Image (tube, rainbow, N blue to C red; front, side, top):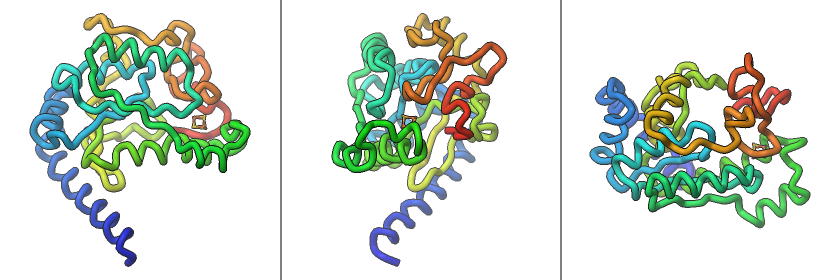
Length: 234
Ligand code: SF4
């Protein structure tokens, strides 16, 4: 095996072992206690949050800010976001006192080579997501052993059995809100008086890149508004 592959393979195995141990010890905890254990005890200085600053993101960010306002928060700016999301990022950061929001962007040269016209999303969405999301996110989380997501089981898109702690490639991935319902999320946001994403009022329930997101009709699932009609899930 080549050295790089060997290193990556070892990292993957380590993450699997660690995730299994952590899941056995901590999966019973509620979201706040799980976050406190991961941030303060298991991965001090070695964990980050990845946040889209979408419709529900403020709930997880508020829980994290209760523990450590200087926790690294990785915001992936794909270059295709709604301007409302970028403005909301700053509103939320100010409201919660977040002091370590880091912006991850796709590589300019990569974009010039693969998405010259900026319309790759319209004919090769997987390739577009790879260059604009996957690569910069992997680069952003590489310094850490673990990262935290806001994913929940009720969101669908293959998340029905989402565990609070899992291994993903070479990382321990922590999903503190895995078992939360939509009512839990928006009840928490209302109780805490947290700022709401401005596009919520226009019917957007799951907010990603502008070209791939549309408002959701009353009887649709929230992620039906993402990559609508393409068969793609995420
Ligand atoms: S969600 Fe759409 S615009 Fe954003 S990276 Fe994926 S395909 Fe491209």
